[in-house]
Image 1 (cartoon, rainbow, N blue to C red):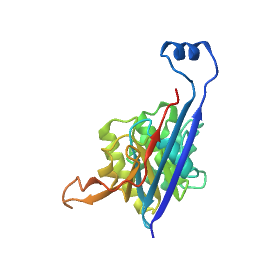
Image 2: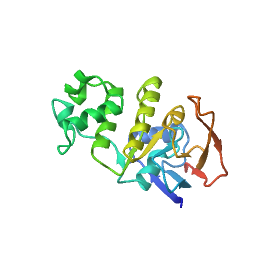
Image 3: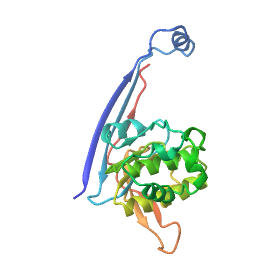
Length: 230
């Protein structure tokens, strides 16, 4: 039985009166400094799933929506203190399991395992974060800005590796991104677009093709409302 997660999130921001704020209001003839936003819709999730994607342009409410709907799954700003990332992994897992997790997300440079997190490249940091989330044993893992800071080749290869690993471990993984090019590599069970505030259907293509899925919009299940009060 599918799950329908409705949301209607309203936010209002009003900065303090400062010289710069007042200068902008005066220069651009704004009647008010108050900014109102509203995000409304419904995400439909199938009963059985492992990979979901929330995709949309910047400013369409992706982060706001997932923090509201999936607060316990949200992965952000992990803390790394050790001189080696190996020692930042959960204490209750074996070195064999750590190595397997690193390999499964495409972090296969063994010398890099000995480095501190701070000196890793953006692509390596993303993979370490993914491996650590898998090792921590969360039932549902949600990554905001997934693959946003890595080049698109690494993004696609990493997406394929993550898709395989979360299915193998039967983890629920949600990728939140402004990039739609990773969808066919993640092979998700559901996709929600914040551009139109609606679920997208995934139509299977030729099984022998790397591009196994194409996206087709379904009827609108929600509306996106965003206004600035001026």
